[in-house]
Length: 475
Ligand code: GBH
Image 1 (cartoon, helix red, strand yellow):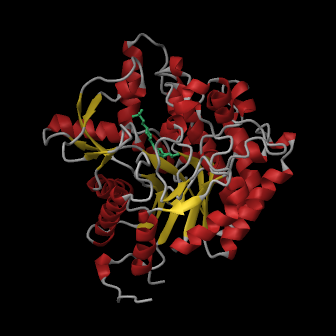
Image 2: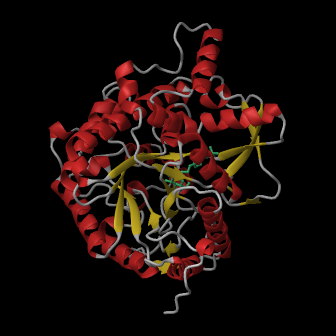
Image 3: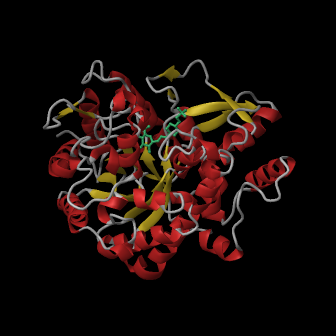
């Protein structure tokens, strides 16, 4: 195989963690294998089928529970160095609580998955929570609204660390807290408690942050000799000002602080960014409330949160232009931010209404976190392009997406000095895309959902990535 010599900035740094990503509910299937507990996504898809496009669900999904060895073979063939997957909490702990006992088959599945990855030279990047909460915990005082949930999560994290800390070097406690809270103030996802808007999302977000910081502390206290690194996977659409007016520049900053910043700021600095604190306190007061809709941390909680990430996991798909204005339910986090957003006409639309192709936003985001937080290590934990699969294998737009986003990353690294150490493309294969069912396809492998075998087939983008990684990998 021909390998051109490393040329600084057409290249990637040595050891760059190219990989791909999935999540348990979206790919595993085997929803009731042996003693697995029900998750909130099992529950909502079974009890409210119209919640999902074409009444689909993740009962079988990609059947990765049975096909993980084949999945690892295809990853290895592409040349991926890492695989980001998530652990289904109720598969391991059927009721969500360690005290109630664990599932041997559930634990065994992840043991085999991790061992098979390591045997093939692929680094496991493990997410502990990618949205499939045990239904039993949702029913006990409202899931992420429950003041006890952060302790349950920490117990679960402790259990997983105790099993896998020696084997796993990158841990992500929680995927996209910003998306999770949408289930507690909007009906964008399970448990779809829209009626709590303006309050539920802040309470859930608060408990997610506490859960994360407790898991982080536990790792440092009991498992840090394994030298693993822990973070969250943060998300948002990166906001640039709609014009260079002061108002628009301020709106873009509010937009950032109400999305990425809502969670990154407390994790790094210990408490909510002053913009969130002051705006939500003010709005709450104006609404005649005695207490702020945004909860307060105690001093001890602040101390524990502060610095609770060894790197930043960033999920980047798209960007927005921001200007001042009011949008969203009254009240809601979106409305509190006092931002309205628009698209630049040059950004190409995709089948997902929220996603237009704007690679420059990724470079801006990387520079933002470099400048605001002292150039932390960054792993791009998700990045990808959706289509409708009408020409399933001929996905040239996805190739264009990855090519331009990789270029943005190289510029961020070599021209701007950002510390990016890896990229896991979303996704290894087409899968259950939440409310869009199987209609929106993000995979570099296509999956035949009509065949019981769930046959995986390389798309053009997979061939392209394979070649790209070979050309850019000088390990
Ligand atoms: C990621 O979320 C998820 O982590 C992953 O599981 C998922 O498959 C992947 O993206 C692709 O969607 O209210 O209609 O404007 C991406 C984050 C998705 C969060 C879209 C905000 C807004 C939808 N975002 N969502 S809408």
